[in-house]
Figure 1 (tube, helix red, strand yellow):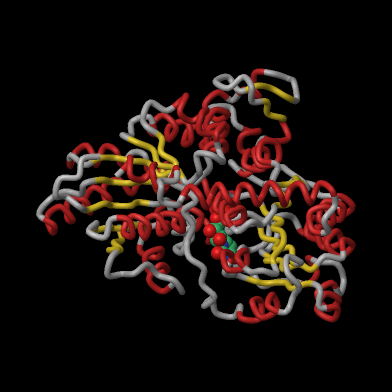
Figure 2 (cartoon, helix red, strand yellow):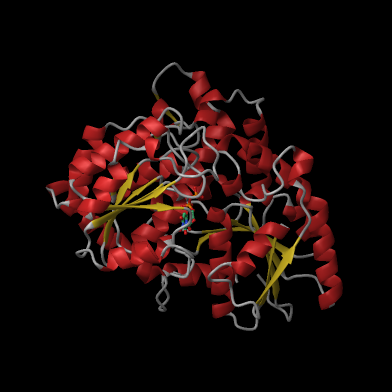
Length: 469
Ligand code: UDP
């Protein structure tokens, strides 16, 4: 990108924590590397308010936060549904579709910013769900880029599946992807909406449109590391007509100042090194109540210390109160009396937990941010992917990187983990079995590759960002 004297960049993430977090981290990164740069981050009013009141808001003097109007109610969503975390999973496609109505407001904002600054932005960096913003960039003569907050392999596989729906053309349980014949997908690795898709449903309609819009962008930057995702990047570069620059891992900074969670970090402080399994399914996924019981019994039988972030199970109000009947009888009391397990409710400081010396493993849904946060801290993963690209993140980490073991897979409603398998896998990863040792060795290697990517010299992500900017 030519610099000139225009030093203003607009960032536009989709309204989900797993998208806003890396965009905020990217904003800070851009400012650190180019202190003269002026960065504006655009989102809807509630998200901007949340960023401002969060425990680690970006340095507001260097990042301008601007909101554009959005009315969830006009799309049949509850008024607070400006983020995926506020709605049950089945409403997410409604939010995705509703968010496409932001185009006129975004265009008006760029117009306002252009008036205020006396020149249009140098570049718009948008979410892949807002690929239509290339129209706005063209109108103002700005460079347009998509920032993928998902991994290369997950993105390539997920996009290929939605584009071709190959599972509908075969009865076989396993099938290759049309563009990538070496990649074999098992039917059990299809999330619910893909299994049900016929090319005319709202998910197909939305995702197929987004995938073709992405081809219009001038460049792609992606939150991954060249040396870690060689296969995924090769796949992505095969299908995208523009340059693809990996600039990861881009993760947000730790913060312990999350109200009501002091006891978690205190408890971690008192545990032996690398002894605690952190259990979390991210900001929007959840499992069924019977599966929560199965997981609880597996954890208890493994005799492993754990810290489990409990979200209401499938079918319950996402903001509802915790109910002890979701877990085995007296489970919480037993864990508390023995001092072996802690249940956390609500939002926890994940990056700080993963950075803590007592954390030795992460039972995760494999959202891409969780993957990067875990591997960049050298924490091995027990995978329980539930939707979207998570299934391919887990596949890539197990088959290519060797940094995780899958304990279950599938969809939130139908995913089945067996307590015996949970016990076995958790013991293997946490208590130094042969496979556990090999996984830890590989995680250390990957952690090193991630660190090297950001060392001057230049590392591959330093190079990626400077080629982009
Ligand atoms: N996160 C957090 N505390 C929580 C739950 C999630 O800080 O209690 C953060 C997590 O560190 C990550 C993001 O929210 O940065 C979740 O993104 P991810 O891609 O892992 O999963 P998603 O929630 O999008 O499925």
